[in-house]
Image 1 (cartoon, rainbow, N blue to C red):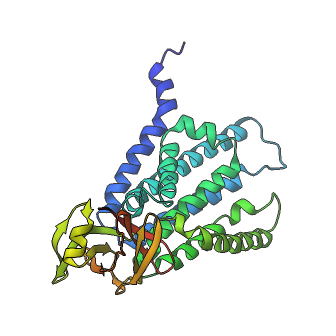
Image 2 (image 1 turned 180 degrees about the vertical axis):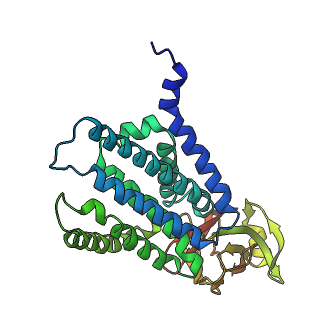
Length: 335
């Protein structure tokens, strides 16, 4: 048994606690000014540089390492690896609140939120990270690509890039970031760059059908309610579910009111898709969202025709032009 149990405990959990503390610190610093795009870009560049160094250090060498040289190389590898783990954790923890606000928990894009949360937990607990990622270098490469993609998808709209193009741009950049990992031992960088370009092209194509599975962060619903009418872009007579069919007929319809948060400088086309029992019945184009208002860009749609039998489960999906779900209103109409 070790004479210094605290040392064994520190070796096992010290990195986890340090990673968690630095992640919380990064979260507090960044959330004070989310639009500080320079900070995010600088952090991503630091992450990529550490990843590139780690990849080259981990590559097998033809010269035998022995004695002090081998121990020194191992020490440098451990330090760089721990730094990389901490950077992953900080980045995922930073973007987690944005995806939590943007994801709709009853939709497919909630899976992406779970992936971000799972990555943040995995990189926070050192024994788990060492057991899962260390024996599988390809998983470390995937973690880099995923972390950078998640961060860029939040960061690029801050400079006015629309969510769909932010998705595609993020995919291209994170694929190109894998260039150091794609360089074979003793190979040339040109070949690695060519393989990264191919990966980027594949990622762009795959994202077209998968975009509905990714929240359009940092867009999110700041406010959403049902009302009988709207006056001065404010809901009049907010109502709660369930709603009787008799009231719908008497008052001539229903208003879906939503306030959508978007960063300053961003313009995005959005739609209200009214659904009954999961099937779309009406799609209403809305005024383009203009970012910059802390309370969200206010917009609404009115539905007057609920058919001869309106009873059922209704939803109003707020979607972007390219099909990403911003949020959802749900209500029930009874006979």
